[in-house]
Amino acid sequence: MTATTSTTRGRVRIEPGAKRIRTYLGGVPVADTVHPMLVWESPHYPAYYLPVSDVRTDLLVPDGEIVHSPSRGDGHTYTVRAGGKEAPGAAVRYVDSPMEELRDLVRFDWAAMDAWFEEDEEVFTHPRSPYTRVDILPSSRHVRVEVDGVTVAESDHPRLLFETGLPVRYYLPKTDVRMDLLTPTRSQTSCPYKGDAEYWSVRGGDTVHEDLAWSYRAPLPESQKVAGLVSFYNEKVDIYVDGVREELPSR
Image 1 (cartoon, rainbow, N blue to C red):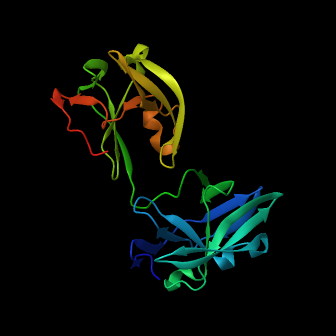
Image 2 (cartoon, helix red, strand yellow; image 1 turned 45 degrees about the vertical axis):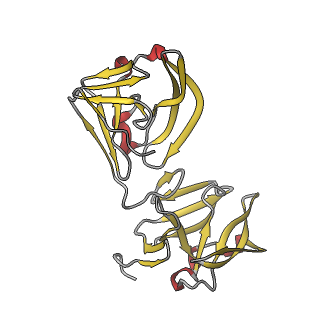
């Protein structure tokens, strides 16, 4: 296959990747390849399928279980044992798949493994899609955020984050946010493009809205421009840009 070739069956799309991919368990490299395949099992991001020739198959123990996919066929599951750790069912092979490209590949469950690397950079949450781009731009547009009619943030120097497939997010300096109306929560999320986010609930009038605002205290290098800034869910607040109320995006 060439770098521009892709195969589709049902909702599943397959195409070759160009990055070196490694995955570890118990400190042991279980797979190391420069010929990964990107398989879109869902529309939002791909999974990595790795050539069996680049997998430590001596670390895979058959489970005797089969998982079925309408598009990929029957998958035989394996427990991964490495470095004193065990990950039951963490590897799957579709040796008789109707999609010929999958037959000599191994799929590892992302969360079951200890670490994943694209080239020499550790990647979290899920593989990065080559079709997702994040642009962060400084702006002089006036942005005001209302919650239940209460202005909770207002800034003339926001940073605008444009991410493929998502509404534009407005990141505002904490000095332009009514932090007295925000209460930290224990919620956290992780993004392979931006890093780990912390959250706040926001009080508007007499109502407290859980996890309405977030911030990346120490974002990944490509998203450093939003470090320490606060953003609000466009879908759940009223945002005015240069005095014009933004339409609510679909949730």
